[in-house]
Image 1 (cartoon, rainbow, N blue to C red):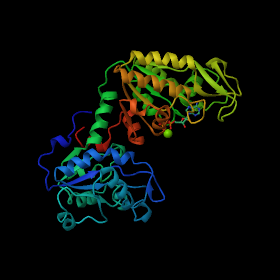
Image 2: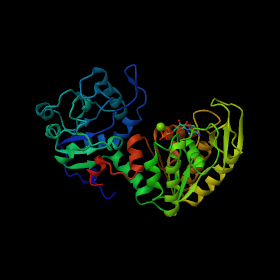
Image 3: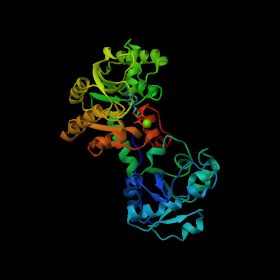
Image 4: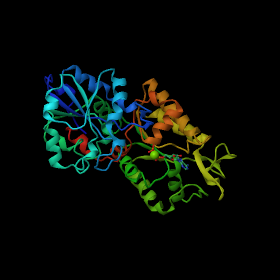
Length: 394
Ligand code: ADP
Ligand code: MG
C-alpha cells in the first residue's frame, strides 16, 4: 500500500457534485435503525464536503435485493437516522437526474436509492458506471467495508471520475498500513476463531509478515492435532493436518515464532458454566473438548505482547459467547488495551466476532483501531489488493 488521494487533494469544491460511496448497510428492526455505528463513521466526510459547498450525493447498498427493486430494501428508511447523526437535513433521490441535481442548493446532502436495485452494480457494468458517473464531478470512497468488491459504486466509477479516499477510509487505511503494511517490529498477530479452513490464506500471509503468530480458538486444535496431540471431542479439522503442518514449516522458514496453547480449559459439554478442568494440552481426555486457552498460556502470551510494538488481532481465543470460555480472550484483550494505553503497542483488530469479543471485554475503544469491516478486513489480512482501495492510488 502506498500513497492515496484524500480530501486534502481536492481543489475548490463549491457547487461541484460529489459522488460519495458510503456504508449505510445498518441493522434495522421495525423500520428503525438499531445500531448507527456505520452512519456515524461517515459524518466527518459528509460534513466536510457539505461545508465546502459540494452537492453530496451518497451512494450505497442496503441488503441483498439482487438487482431488482424491493421496497423492503429501500434506502429511504435510513434517511431519518442519517439526519439524526449529522444534525442536518438529508433528502432522498429515487432516480438521480441531471436536472434534479442541478436544482439542488450547494451543500445539499442526498441519499440516492439502493445501488443494488440495478442489475449492473454487482457486475461492475461499464455502461452503468458511465451513466452514474455523469451525475458527478468527482468520486469519494468512504466505505472500506465494501472495497474488496469491484462494483460500480466501489470501482467502476473511478474509471470516469477523479477518485479520493474519504476521512473514514483514510483513517482505516492508515491504521492498517501501521499494523501490517509498514509496521514497527516486533509484530504479533493473534488469530483465533472456529476453523482453520476459513483463515488459511490469512495464516499463510501472516507467517511471512509477523514475528509472533499466536494461534488460539478452535483452530488451535487443528494445529495441536497435527503435532500429534490428542484433542478429544474438540472442534478440529483433522483433514487439514498436512496444511497445518505446512503453515508451521513456513513459519519456521520465515523466522516467525508460532505460539500454540500449552494449557487449555476443557469440558465434557458445550454449555454455560459446566464443570471444567484446566489441563496441559497433553492431558485432554477422549470425551473432553477444548473451549478456551488456559491461564498459564495467557500469561505467557501477555509477556510476548509486552515485547512487541505492533499487534493485529482477528478471532477470539475461546468460545467467548459462553462463560467461562471468554476468560482468555478477555484477559489478553485487556493486556493489549493496557499496553496500547501506555503507548508501547499499536493494536489493530477486526472481524465480526472479534469486535463483539472486544466489546464484551470492554476494550474496543482502547485499541488503536478496530475495523468493523468483516470480509474486507480479512481479505486485507490475506495480503490481497482490494479493488476499491487500489483505485484510490493506494
Ligand atoms: P471473526 O468473526 O472475528 O473472524 P470467527 O468467526 O473466525 O471470528 O470465530 C469466532 C467463533 O469461534 C466464535 O463463535 C467462537 O465461539 C468460536 N470458537 C473459538 N474458540 C473455540 C473453541 N475452542 N471451540 C469451538 N468454537 C470456538
Ligand atoms: Mg465470524
